[in-house]
Structures are given as C-alpha cells and as structure tokens.
Image (tube, rainbow, N blue to C red; front, side, top):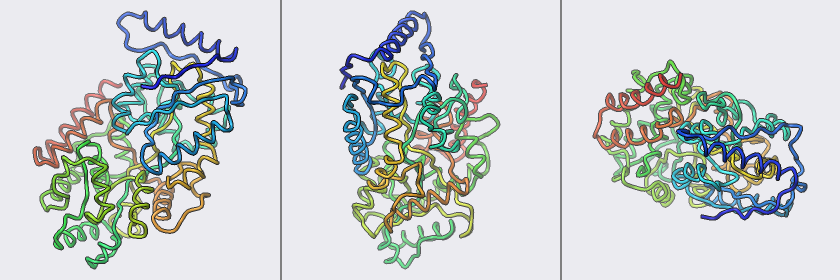
Length: 460
C-alpha cells in the first residue's frame, strides 16, 4: 500500500492538522466507541481556493478508474492538475470497484487513510462512513467553489446524508461525482440485422426479440455475475418495467413505508426466472467474471448486454459502428423513460486528511468545466455540462441522448443496493440464488424484505 509522504504544511494547514490530531486522539480514547468525533468544520469564508497558496502538499488519492476511458481521463486530469499546481503532489492508488470496496473500510479506520477516496454512494459504504464521522462534509467547500451551481440538487442528493448518516438523499454533501450513469441495453447491430430484428421500441418487442434470437441458436443475453452485483443492474432494468419510479426511489433510498412484497416486484423476479428457464442467458453466467463477459460480447458473443455507461469507451473502441445503446423500452414507444442510474462513484475527503483544503482544490479541478470536456473526449459521460459537449455520432451519441432524455423525464432511479448497510450483499446473494433456481420469486422478495424491514424499523 502506498502511503502519503506529507510535506511541511503552511501555517493554516498546520493548525488544521493539529486540530485533527487532537480530535483523532480523543476519539481513540473513547471506550466502547467505533466511531470518531465529528471532523472540524471549515467555513466558506476561510477556505483558500487558490491551490497555489497551499504550500507543498502530498495527497494520497484512491480511485477505481481502471478501465480504458476511465483511466485515460484520470491520467489526463491528474497530469494537468500537477502541471498547474506543482506544489501539490498526487500519489494515486487505482483499484477495481470490488477491491476498493473491500479495502476502503479498513483504510478509513486506520491512522493514515487516503486524503481523497472514491466511495460507493450507498448506505453500505458512504452511509456507514458518514455515521462513523470518517468523511468531511463538503458544504463549506461547495459554497466557496460554487459547487451548488455546478451540480443541481437532483445530482447532489446521491452524495447527501444527514450528519448522523440515517437519512440518505438529504442533508450534508459528502462527495462529488465526475460522471453520470445510466444502465441500458447495449446491442450488436450486425447480430440484430442477421436475425431480421429491429432495435426494440417497446418492452414486448424486446422480449419477443429474445425468443427470436434464441431460436437462431445462441443465448441472446450476456451476463457475468460471479461478483453478484451485475445482476442487480439486470433486475433493476426488469423492475423498471413493472414498478413506478417513485416506488423504486423509496426502496433504494431506504425510506420508511416501502416494501419489497408487492406483485410488481414478484413479477420482475418471475421474469428473470423465466429468462433463465428459456435459456436467454449465456451458459455459466453465475460463475463468470463481469469483465470477461462484456469482453466476450464485444467479440461477438450474444446480442444484448444490460450494463451501464461506464463501458461506453471500451465497447465503442472494440466494436466500432456495430454497437448501439438504448434506454430499456417501456410499454409503448412513447413511454416515459425509466432506468437505473444516477452518478458515478463520488470523490470524498477523509476526516483524517491533514490537507482538506488541497483535497477540496483537487475535487474542484477534476469536476470543473474543463474536466467535463476531458471526460467527454475520453469516452465518458460527464455528469455536468453534458449538453454542451462535442459528441461523436454512434454509441457516444446514443449514450448522451439516453442519459439526457431520462434525466429530463425524471426517470433515473437509484441503485437498489443503496437501501441499507447490508443490502449490497443481501440483494447480490439473493439474485444469484434466484438465477440459479435455488429460490423462488416469493423467497427472493422475502429475503429482501427481511433486510429492508429490519433496517427501516431500526433507522427511525
């Protein structure tokens, strides 16, 4: 593990570091407590927004920007940041989503956590980190830099929690995302044409095309679900055809009053079970890694891939004009679009960082207007200034249109694993068992309801 070699701070930062050390020491002396004291709060008027005046600083940054387009934008932005602010040295540790999720909790509870981390928005990660006072509320920095104007409330809600971590979607701001995300359906134009099938305009047409393609001799849907989370995206896509956006939002934000035990959720689970029974998925999908699965799709295996826009750059590079992308269609061609999505993993500042102002300057730089242009050029979907970007015809145009249309219609719904601190593991395991035929749709929703109901009752 790379550790930050911290340089001598400025007088302002030395004071901040001293306060942080005292807070950390006091927290460590609190018997029976697994949380730290709340981090000291900056004020908007005290924030130094000229990073060149912050002295010699080294920032340790953990991110999960490992794939082609993701890695390209991060490298470009970090290089530009260091060229503009040579006094701030970046030490970057880049891990896969799964590795980051596994190691971040331990890192934040240690004595030398990273200064900046990319953290999953949901209650299992960011919610728990907020509850343990391991992240810095960004509101003073948002006011100083104008982030409230850069990001509308509909985006900020994905990184907002009450100070006690109980309420998700409201309260303090704890992270800034770079990219927007929408889960849709990638398709091979050549394979559809060869089967005499047009890109589906309705959900019935999509399901009918699955049968047609299967009859041609190859499973039409590609899935790699060894990590368990990929099936959450497939289930969310099906659930969006049976359940209203408001109901899904209530479930995903872990709010009281919602329930998994509805006919709509049962119908979605039954649809997945039926797809497995009809042989629509590739063989062995529950034991296959995610990356080899989508890479197989890019090389001609299967016709459809239900996945998010984070694969845009890699699939576009591998498949060229052959790949298209659509929002999961609704009951009619003019149905209001609805899809799982929101923002990419936001970047946050850790409470034990000795350089929160330099960290805030870094967050501001990698989410600036210029950064959004870099994101678009490297095949990513910028979460801000999306409509002003130069977009290439083909897959990138498809993705930008899908995201813009769905956001405008208010049809983006959060990831279902956000709901409770344990839902990521619960729904992943439950879906793997459902798809393996080990459980029925009724048992599936019972399992989710047990997790959700226990949390809602306890959370107050």
